[in-house]
Structures are given as structure tokens and as C-alpha cells.
Length: 478
Image (tube, rainbow, N blue to C red; front, top):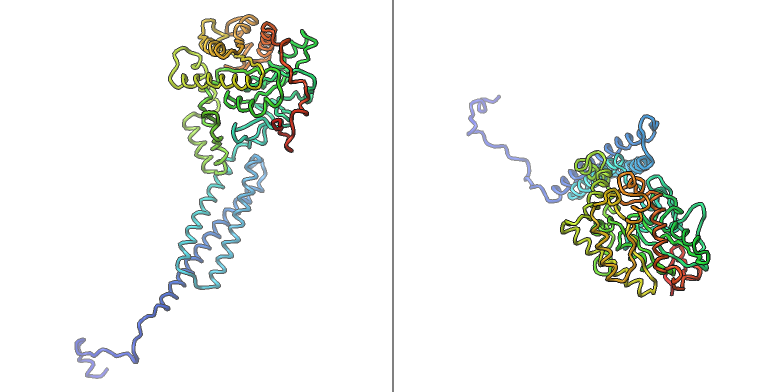
């Protein structure tokens, strides 16, 4: 080392000047670095997406190919596994292709990583929802049952529909009327038609069509009056309340040209008026708020619903729901009504007025039939508020009113055993209960001279009155 450098101090050492002028970094050079960095991040994101899709698709493929004795999956779950497998395989291909494209290009706009992160988060949420949905599959859709969705009433009998309801087969003809499978469609030509309007009681829930009370009443009358040639038109729909039944009568039932309309009512018509599915407002229905149908595509939603239902109602929510419903139905018969049930009774009484007005305009007589509670048959001193309330309203409207409670008590007695023989649950009759109701209705119509005095107008064949719209549904006459 030179002696001069050995004795030098930092202060005496002169800085080394660069060989040429130093140029500041240009904007293009900074942008190039940023775009290169964005490409690296994008490649990493594509790689993460590809790896995730690969592992999920592999797991789904294994689940799909495992024997069902090892991993039991019902048909809905198998379909969801297949859909998720195809979706994640597509995601794997897209992510791998994106990774190769980014690596080949080398530079991307700086906003690309943020956009890709947003997309990957959304895809990840959908992926998680699909995977959760495999364990919580959607409920069977309504079209697989004998019913179909209806824009205003919520649901309706599917023309020519058939299906199992709690293990019992129910079929409908092309007009949506309950059909006896053994006999086939009825021929209404030249017959006077008794149109039965109501809910599952009128349908003949848990029984063959020939055992429903309306059919039994008409058979009794035809035996006693050979020249009457009466036909029973079973227009009942499971789960309907009076508002839905009124809408059906106005838009479809009267098009069948009935000679007599018989409306069936029980206390669950009172308790269902403020059901979240339907509500009567003025003369129209609110749209059917089928939230479950609209959101059932989400597996996370189905899982949360199942968790909340199990937390709130225990291991068997349907059983708890039926128990709560029966408690409310019984409460609707008591004299000391809470305000909400008073309001629901007012809705029922208002709807009965609209029924009477509708039938009067159509020049068709109407009868109201009330099915008692099981508790009213079991206990002689049980409240008769429903009968008194309905009888008063029918007197105001000029409608014949049949209370079936005296007929049940006369035919089978009073007490727990007769009640068990007459009713399946709080409101649905047994086969014996339908028989007692049919005989009581036949006697009531005879006592009121409603068979011989039935007006004409129902003698034409239904095919002459109604026109098919191509799907089996019949339109109103011109």
C-alpha cells in the first residue's frame, strides 16, 4: 500500500468520482419493475388456485368412486359430488392455463393481482358453499310431488299429477281434482256436480279417494235418489287455507260449472291465515314468498338453517312443529282468545263473506261444513266457540251451515276412545270419521231439500265447458 494512503484519515481521502454522469431511474423502468412484480404475484395466485382445485377435485373423485357401503350417499348428494367435481376440474384447468399464460407474458398491469385476489375469494366462497352443500343437500323439489308451484296461491294440484304424501299415493285428473286411481277419470256428462272445496280433509288425507267424505256423501245420495245422478268433484288441496281456496274457486272451480259448492272448514284454516307463505290483502294475494326455494341452492344457507332448527327445536323439528301447530289450533277454539287469534278469526269471517258473494254472483248455492276438533269429540264440555261463531256468520250471510260435531257424537259417542276412532290427529278424520261426515252431510242436504232443488247448469260435459291450454290446465270459459 502506498505510504501516503497508509497515513491517510477518512477525512483526507477524496471520494472516487464515477466515470460518467449518473442518470436517475426513469418512469418506464419503474413501471417495468411494477408490472414484472404484478406478474409474479399473479402467477403465485394462479398456482394457489390450481393446487386448491387439484386437491379438492382429487378428494371428490375419491368420494365419487368409493363403494356406497363405505361412503353412503343418497342420489341428491351423488349429484352434488359430480357437479362439484366437474366445477373444480374446470377451475384447475383455468388456473393452470392462467399460470402458464402469466409466466409466458412476464409482465401484467399493476391492478391484476387485486382483481385476481377478488375473483379467487369469490370462487373460494362458492367452492366452500358447494362442498358444504354435499352434506346438506336441498330438499326434493315440488315438481317431484303431485303439486306444482303457483304464482299467486303458492302451490296447486298438478294436472295429471301423482305422488306419495307421507307414504300414501295421491293422484289428480287433468283439472287438478282428486282422482281415484282404481276408477280413472270421472265422466260428468249429464250429472249434477257437487264441488267440494277445502284442504287436506277434503282431499281425503291418508285415505283413498273413494273414502273422502264428499265422495261418500254423494254415494249415499245416489243410493237414496236413483234419479239424481250426482257427481262429487273433489277440489281439495293439501295445506290450503280459505284465502287460497277462494282464489281457486274463482279462477278454476267455477269453470267446472258446479250445481252446488260445499266449503269445508276446520280450525287450522284459522291458524294459517298469517302464514308467511301467503296472505290475503284486499282482494288480491301477496306474491308467494318461497324463500326456501329461492335460496335452497346455497349449501351454507342450508347448513345454517339445519343448525338453527336443531338448536331451537331439537333433533326432530317436524315433530315439534306439528306439536306447536296442534297447540295453536286448540287454542283457537277457546273462549279466551289472544289478539292475534281474534284477528285471524276476523279474516276467516271476512273470507266467508267473499265466498258467499262469489257463489251468489255465479248463481250457485253454497254450504259450509265444519269439522270439529278431536278434543271436542273427546270432551263433552269442550268449548264450542267455533260452532257458535260460524253459525252466527252463516245466518248473516244466508248460508246453510253444517256442524259435524253432533253427528260424530251421535254416531260414535263421546270420550277418548270415540275420538281416537274418529280422528287421526287434532283435525284429520279417520276412514270412519269420513264415513260419519259423509252420511251427516247427505242427511243435511236432504233435510234442506238441496238435492231436488239443485239448479241446472252442470249438465254439460266438462270438455264442452273448458279448454285445455296445452299443459293440461283448463281455462275459464269465454
